[in-house]
Amino acid sequence: MAQIKDMLESVKPIRVDGRDVDELRPVHITRKFTDVPEGSVLIECGNTRVMCTATFTVGVPRWRRDSGLGWVTAEYSMLPRATAERTDRESVRGKIGGRTHEISRLIGRCLRGVVDMKAMGECQIQIDCDVLQADGGTRTASVTGAYVALVDALHWAEKNGHIRSAANVIKDSISAVSVGVINGTPMLDLPYVEDSQAMTDMNVAMTGSGTFIEIQGTAEHRPFNRDELNTLLDLATKGNRELQAAQKAALAK
Image 1 (tube, rainbow, N blue to C red):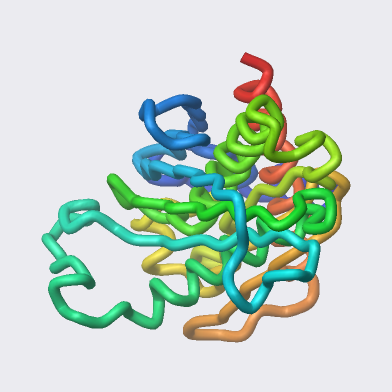
Image 2 (image 1 turned 180 degrees about the horizontal axis):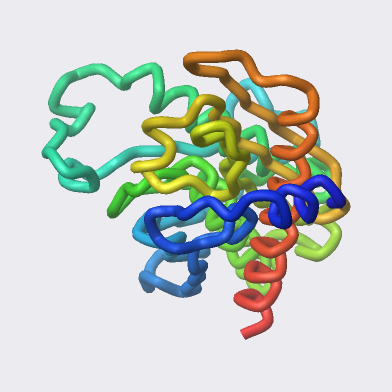
């Protein structure tokens, strides 16, 4: 983390919302947001709000049967007026967009990376992440909120006798955060106004033990160098640790 300290001492860029370059937006995680699902969470990261629900079912898809293994999958979508201008529902268009598929797969991969499928048995958890309001970082907020919903669904399954132990199924925690280079300065947790002008945009999914499940990074306008990459990963590590503390605090309530 020395690079972050050096950077903060050498430059004090002014962000639109007044944050330091290594500061997360305010994070709020509300459990039991709706009554019906086995897990239901509202996660708020600044002005980005995502509802994450987890549905537990006994049984797995046909291709997974008789394997003794469970399954976790995810779907992501955005409400028509989650953004400044209305976007038609993909169900109305008759086609799921490539971005939606990509983010759905990302969320599923992240959650499967911290679940012991054998301990889960032949049961399935389906995660639905619906963006209520978008201001950058919707996919990373979805991963972070979905983990909490997943844990609640597993505790419900244990309570109702569908699995032996939720603690045995959950191998680790998982969260995700965005980082980027704005006007030459690496920054943590980008809102839309920063994300849209980023020279480098990166999403980092990290476990509670500090290992990575997903790193998505792309340069615009100019390539990024190794020093910038290292600083971005340091920023993401700091942000993910704080998000995991927020997850832990929410689950303790």
